[in-house]
Image: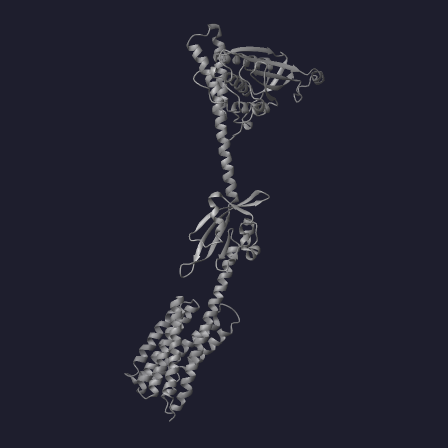
Length: 593
């Protein structure tokens, strides 16, 4: 009788055992259930080959050998089928578990009930083979890619193994048949193992490639731009194509010359450390703001977030970063900041303008309460109080309309009024205001009785009050303040207009002038006197304020006055007068009745 050398059989069995261990190690590293179940199935088959080796040595009675071999064959087939289901991410059918349990119970009855042995041995052989053939068919039916030769080879070897593994040549009388049976089984199962290892790694590479492709597609279609910089190679491993819009340098240029990242971008003062993130490994995540310059102008803002990438030893090997376009947000912040500043200036203007009518109303009221006003002048004082109250109401309305933040956008109500009526009243108020301040008013009026103005009377009253208040500020107590108003007609134009009521062409102008006897305005300050918040170098005589000089004139009143006059198509001028003080005047277009 031809005997197989024991060491050859044990070596072949050990080969299957080692490959099963490899599968189990891979399953532990990858956390894949399919690899774990396949490893267990090869472990079971290793035990089955060892059982065949013992049987060939004559150690087992026939019926017990067949029972144990079918149990191992059933366990290996069932576990292999489970691994195949997990590999293709399929749920095993419920009936397979119960039929496998039934088959196992029948096999256990072989030594006890000869009738069951005779009746069930062939169906159990077919069932075990069918489990493996089913697994082989799954490789043909379910595919993660097309035209994969290993898939066809795996299906072929699984089906061959399913048919061949249950051959009972070892139990035949002619032991010589065991040679091809044993080694063909060893070859088949190990070839199948190697093919499945190849399939596993090819699938893993395919999934990694697909995942990387999807990730790249996601990144490149994202509104944010990303980059990955490797410190060891001192080069970019990945740069989003859209990064060029944020830093002015294309991805291709960065791959070739990484140092160009900051060619066209600058950082805020508190973010200067960002410039060195590529020159040395960073230890902590960070962020900052970048601005892209073109021709000295900021055209885009971006926000950068970066974090270090460490290897298994904790050493920083790379840096990953995300750039986000915040131009729109930055623009909104700047607009909000500008709006807040303009709103602040508006409130300053209003508070400044409110002081004048409030002071006048207080002065008129105290004069009436102290009964120093003659009875015949009471009505005049009350009219003045009413006029200033209406002016104050106008200012309060301006404050309520805080969205109109500049003087140019204040609301105006223009009316056609006689010039003599409007400015006679304003001259009277100016005279009283100057007298109440302790200065001497000098009033001069030369207003034509047949002329009209198109004005907002309360706005013009606001301008006159600002000029009078400014003159009082800069005139020492007891000195004179000159106030004049005259109308200058252009006779040539007046003769050409005729009876047309269209007032698009003025026929002259009204000139209102306030001249103080203070220290005047330095020549270099004259062109700027109507600018917002102008303080200049004009001096204030300490005699005017015994307790110290008042705060410098801020220029808000004169600034607003200039804006109001411009809205009336007029103009304002400032100069020094013959008395050594300052002379401020404004003009308004004038029309004949």
